[in-house]
Image (cartoon, rainbow, N blue to C red; front, side, top):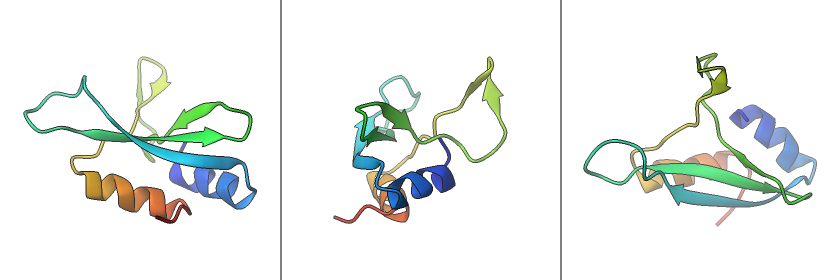
Length: 81
């Protein structure tokens, strides 16, 4: 899901938690991160790129180079520390 869609879900009370998880399959020497969100029904959704890019027919997950950037994006989605 895109960030604007996640904000709408957060405002509606449908997002319960935000998790920042390591993205182990991403190349590079430094760790990289992605954001996952837990919905009220228990489903997990990931933050996708805002662009209309698709890889093999699927949305691309947004990958962060720093933990601070991933945390700031979770805050932009409505979550507070």
